[in-house]
Amino acid sequence: MIYGIYESKLGPILTARDEGGIRLVNFKIKGKDFDIPADWNEDSSAMNDVFNQLEDYFAGKRQEFNLPLAPEGTPFMKRCWEKLLLVPYGQTATYQDIARALDNPNACRAVGLANARNPIHIIIPCHRIIGSNGKLTGYAGGLPIKQKLLELEGVQLISK
Image (cartoon, rainbow, N blue to C red; front, side):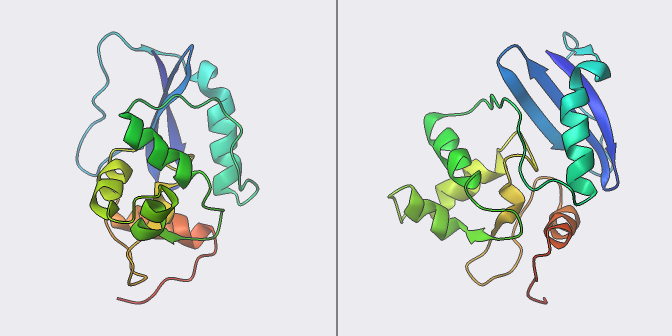
């Protein structure tokens, strides 16, 4: 696995890929170092396409990503992540919306768990999934980052 660390305006983001595609785009959790496996090789130049598209996203110049994705997860997780990719820039959906899109309206909690395990943040836009009451719910990168990503996309949030 090849990796690089992108320095975003919201903090460092660990990115990783192999011959199958992008495997990881993950924010650093406050107070913790990245847990990088010993057999991974750092090569930021091999991550330039990812870094450039992230740069464009944070600059408000990119609404869609064009990268080969290869997230690892169960078949159900992968189906959930495919549905997340259909939520447009600047819009949100609920866990219930995703469960319905999967033809399983009772799977809200399972969708939430799949969302929490999304390994490719921003590109697979799990930050666009909110509670049915219109408020922010959990985000692996932290709720402040989720809020900033949504604000970057022009989403009007309900006050707490």
